[in-house]
Amino acid sequence: MSSTAGQVIRCKAAVAWEAGKPLVIEEVEVAPPQAMEVRLKILFTSLCHTDVYFWEAKGQTPLFPRIFGHEAGGIVESVGEGVTDLQPGDHVLPVFTGECKECRHCKSEESNMCDLLRINTDRGVMLSDNKSRFSINGKPIYHFVGTSTFSEYTVVHVGCVAKINPAAPLDKVCVLSCGISTGLGATLNVAKPWKGSSVAIFGLGAVGLAAAEGARIAGASRIIGIDLNPKRFNEAKKFGVTEFVNPKDHDKPVQEVIAEMTDGGVDRSVECTGNVNAMISAFECVHDGWGVAVLVGVPNKDDSFKTHPLNLLNERTLKGTFFGNYKPRSDLPSVVEKYMNKELELEKFITHEVPFAEINKAFEYMLSGDGLRCIIRMDA
Image 1: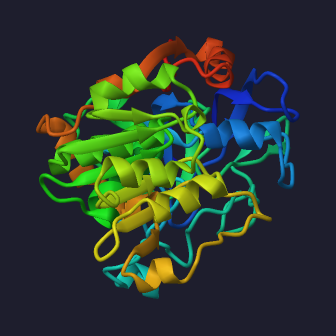
Image 2: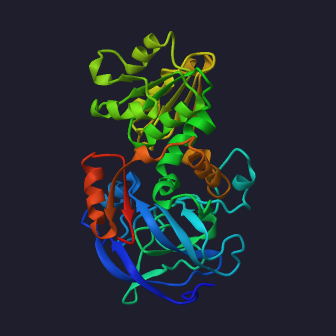
Image 3: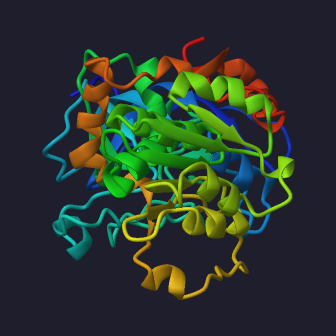
């Protein structure tokens, strides 16, 4: 065991004291892991739009003070009672959702929505005792989606930790613990395009570009990117996108434009915006008889999806996905190997890098729409 095992660790963390205000680098106390928990030393973390959404506290129950962060790579510092498949020194990716390996979902080959550990954005404490492992002067600081990676050390349930190849560079593969895997898996695991097929990608942010990367890996011959921001089109070429459609350039629904471009519709589509109208377009633009549309983006809670039932009766398929249908512990190690084998390119997703002390810059980049992923170096 490490020399700090069983002890409280004092370290730096970026604390969100209130909604929408810059994070403050504070010294926090991180308690030892309890049963079925591990304490991780975070080496690299990145900022995902989900962090920003909950930091802004728009449309959900605010919970502050809180330590955000959920895309990261690190090393196991110590393990709690009952943890057998991880040990100090292991290289890992913490994940916002989990895999207990015991529930019906975990035992199903078709699901990754673990009953015990699926994402819970409202919970700010650990499952075992409903307490936080973070504190400042004895006052608790809340967790975020069970990961809280904007801290030099964090405590995570063992079911939310994927052990990976120690040779993999953590400053690259850390982006696989959320958005990139979500988009990639939506295409490879759910849409399943074949070599020579046509794929439409709605939304060319990081998740949409990861979906396009999946289509490129699968050998799709036409990858059509749909976005309202024409500035994104040039960047998308690096991810295999071959054609671009801006719905604002047309006076008819974009699904009709795509159907005309593709002799009746694309073979597969992946929706990555969360806009319900884009979801409807993504479904209605696939070809009858075999077309499959996959929804990835998270809609507003009051949205409703409307389409004519004939669109389904004419043998179009509508699917949803969560985290690209990857089981975190079982499947993420193989996604890391795709990168190690040069099948998957991650460098092009990383457009900025900042030291931990300048973490608020990462928020500025995200809010201004500048770039894709910003890596935050915890030791800098």
